Length: 326
Ligand code: NDP
Image (cartoon, rainbow, N blue to C red):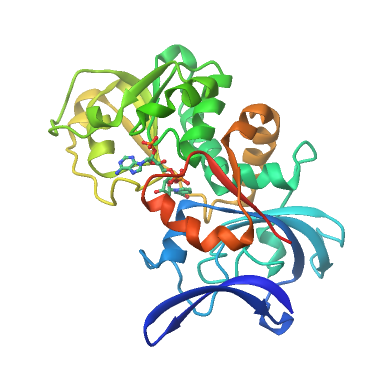
């Protein structure tokens, strides 16, 4: 038996509890991992609270991320004792996830933990931080460089936003951090933000084009926030969009694209090919200031996972939450 958070569906709706489950409940996979650290992401909060249809088979262990030690392997790339991380691939959605002491997965989904990172640090980065790096990579693949001008990051105090702010500032970009939490300005400045922007400035009346403000952006919000942001991007600017914290819709027009040549790049972490993941994790281990990462971390025990999940949806979580797995 091993310790897990389990989401199940009963007559009265979704139930979530921490309980022991049997090794027989491990799902198909050629690598078994002793999970040592996990984390909570926005998507885990949606799954645990049942506020969006993230979970696609019940019962299910949530947790789209884990770090741990290989216990058994039939995969040619891994042997017992290897330190590995997993992000996405439907784990924590349709395959048992990281909020458990054991996980069994397809070895092709794993990435080797970079030697410069501890398992705890890798989960402090987690899918949020790895997605932030995918956004940086997407912008740079378009030839975006710091000399193009200020870059805007939305949801800046959140997981993706905090890591994106730190990564971009470290690479020499001038970062404008958009936040709904004015009280976190000092935190954002410590991460490297040069300008703090009140989220309300991106929630006003939508116009096809507004005054040009930023050369590029990383957006976690979607909805009217992204639509407003696009209308404020300078000629031939580039925006990487990865989230829907403000909404799934995009009430924009084609004006920014056809009149200013703005490029909108979609970023997905779940099915991202392994080669890109390896680049992202190598770069994270080299470029992210681990002291700054520490300022983003809140550590909670397994016991507090279920009660903490709603905080994400209330916009109360700052930075990243890590969960040691006993
Ligand atoms: P967090 O909850 O940590 O951060 C989201 C932040 O967005 C909040 O902290 C808040 O920051 C801001 N925010 C909250 N509500 C709104 C709103 N109504 N309008 C604008 N901003 C808002 O989540 P993550 O950083 O982990 O994830 C952010 C988004 O990215 C989520 O939608 C998530 O699903 C998505 N995501 C997508 C991935 C992909 O593969 N495409 C991978 C990872 C995440 P502040 O208070 O500073 O404004």
